[in-house]
Amino acid sequence: MAPEPEQRISRPPAPDGLLLPNLFQVESRRRETPDTFTLTLTPAENGGRWPFAPGQFNMLTAFGIGEVPISISGDPARPQTLIHTIRSVGAATRTLCGLRRGDTLGVRGPFGTAWPVAAAEGHDLVIVAGGLGLAPVRPAIYHALAHRAAYGNVEIVYGARTPGDILYYHELEGWRGRFDVRVHVTVDSAAADWRGRVGVVTKVMSQARFDPAHTTALVCGPGVMMRFTVQELMSRGVSADDIFVSMERNMQCGMGLCGHCQLGPVFVCKDGPVFPYSRIRDWFEMREV
Amino acid sequence: MENLEALLAAHQFFKGMTPQHLAAVAACGRWEQFTAGDFLCRETEEAQDFFVILSGSVSVEIFSFRRGPLTTGTVEEGEVLGWLWLDKPFHWHLDARARQVTRVVALKVKDLMQRCEADHDLGYELMKRYALHLAVQFRITKLQLVDMYGT
Image 1 (spheres, rainbow over the protein chains, first blue to last red):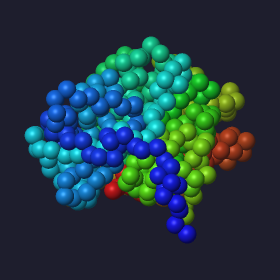
Image 2 (cartoon, each protein chain N blue to C red):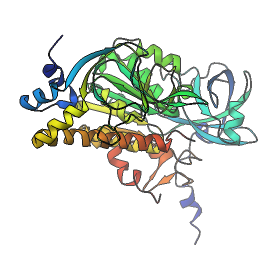
Image 3 (cartoon, each protein chain N blue to C red):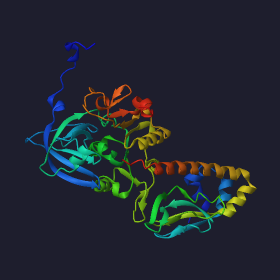
Image 4 (tube, one colour):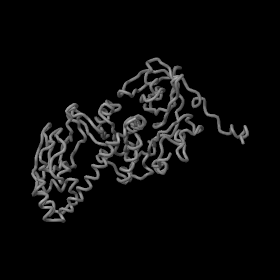
């Protein structure tokens, strides 16, 4: 039986910014890797701001093509511009990656939960990212570096397939040049002229220095990489409550209404994408979902 | 230069080994330094040494006639190199080249094997470490084969 009209409208109405795309313009476009681009966006109307928390995502609309969830990869202290790093893998992302300065796109958001950067204060911070997974954690890195004294050791571990696939190459070099953060970069394979490490992320993690009892770990990357990274962190004594993972699912409405991103009892768009591993662990390793 | 026993005792691979066993292992070793570009070993050469990396960095390479040398892994301070020396015909299957000044203890595998045969306690201690090393290598290799960053 169909629910009564009163029941159907029992949810509080969502703010317009979450339901209707806001118009943004491309201020700049930068090629990161052969198939990945970073767009810097500004509101089409002057003076707009787009406050967000590290780890949140927006729904980006390529008009006439489709809408896709993309993590915000900019600095949360600079909400005047929105930065998104997008890999061209389908019709909508291909269109977004092809936008040029001055082109218009739609933005809904910000959606989802954030990396626990405030709760992690006083702890060592271990940030492990693989491939495009560096984009969703970059706002957390910006925050940690801007509030460096609030944390113990800050260790950034990043893995990519090859040197040509490394995201934010020069920024990683810049972070590595600081004296108060350790950056470990590795690739799975390389030609002989590559001077950096070759090996998987989990191997390089052995170089990271942290006190397991007082560590918060932020993990983002492909599923296989996250699974083995979590195992490695736990084998070194980090509690499942202190490991946070960013999940990727088929987000569509962004508000937990449509159910497309349901993962067991949670909606990734609304309850995530950032989860403490202890909350998601049963579903994280379940193959059927 | 410090004595080999002290260098080995400080190395992750030999952590927890008794002084007697360390002395036996050190008796098979020599200290060596490689400069950038030097080969520690080359494919098809006889595998005479097991390398304990004290400092520096070594690339493990497979040579492709079409693509040149391909780096499949790097071995750094605190690690070991030469995990097929137990297997006949005792030939290297890969090239290993220093990427910077690299200091090692090179252990003569024939001497090491003889000592392990003569003292099974030593053999067991070495094989325990070796088995763990192999397990880690297999895990790493499997992850590399998966191409986990593939779209």
